[in-house]
Length: 280
Image 1: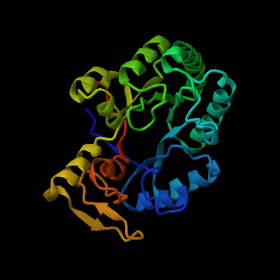
Image 2 (image 1 turned 180 degrees about the horizontal axis):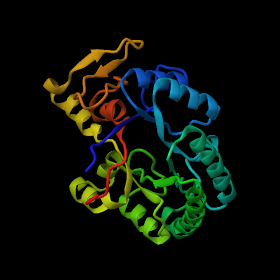
Image 3 (image 1 turned 30 degrees about the vertical axis):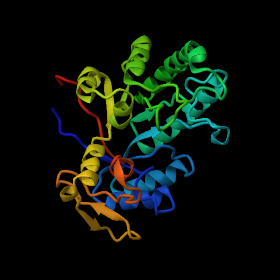
Image 4 (image 1 turned 90 degrees about the vertical axis):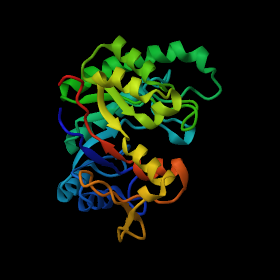
C-alpha cells in the first residue's frame, strides 16, 4: 500500500496572508508538495497555476462554486431549481481544474432551502442530486477528472446541509454507479455524526478518493495532553508551526481558539491525499 501523502488546505492555513498566491508560496516554503483550496475563483487560474508552479506545488482538490452565499447557499448540487447554476459552476470548476492540473473536484451538495422541512424535501433533493451527479460524471470523465462527495455534519458545522453522513453519500454513489465519482472522507464530520470511526473507515475505504483530516486527532492530543504540545515559531506574522513528525511537512497553524475546536482549525487543514482502496 502506498504511503499517505499530505496537502496543505489553503482555505484554513496561513490565514494572515492576503491571497492564494501568497499562501501557495508559504505552503511551498513550509515543505508541502501539494495544496488544495475550497474556492479558487477570486484569482485568475493562470495566476494560480504560475504561483503553484513557482512554489513547487501541485493542486489536488477544489470545490464547485458555492452559489450565492449572500443568500445562504453553500453548494448547488442537490438544490431544486438551481440545476442550471450547478452546471454552470461545474463548467467553471472544470476550467480551473484543467488550468491548475487539479485531478479532483468536490461536488458540493448544498443546503436544504430556508424554511423547508428537511424530511419533506429529502426525496426531491436526492432526485436533483442524482440528476446533477450523472451529468457531472459525464463531464468529468471527458476531462479525466474525479468528482468527490463530502458529507458535512449537521450537528455543529452546517445544520441545513443536505449530505451529512457517509452512509447517505455511499448510497447516492451506488445509485449513480460511476467510477469517477467517489467519497471524500473527513473524519471530523464522520465522528460528530456517527462515531464508530474504525467501522466506518473499514466499510467505506474502498470508495474513498480523498481523505481528511487525520491530523485532527493529533491536534486534539496536542491540546488535551500537554507534553504532546510542541510548537516552533514560524516567523510568519507570529503564527505557530506545529512540530510534526518528520514524515509530515510543517504547517503554519492558526493557534487561536483553545480545545478541540481550535485543534480542528490548526491541524485539520493538513489533509492526507488519495488513500488506496483496500487490497490495492
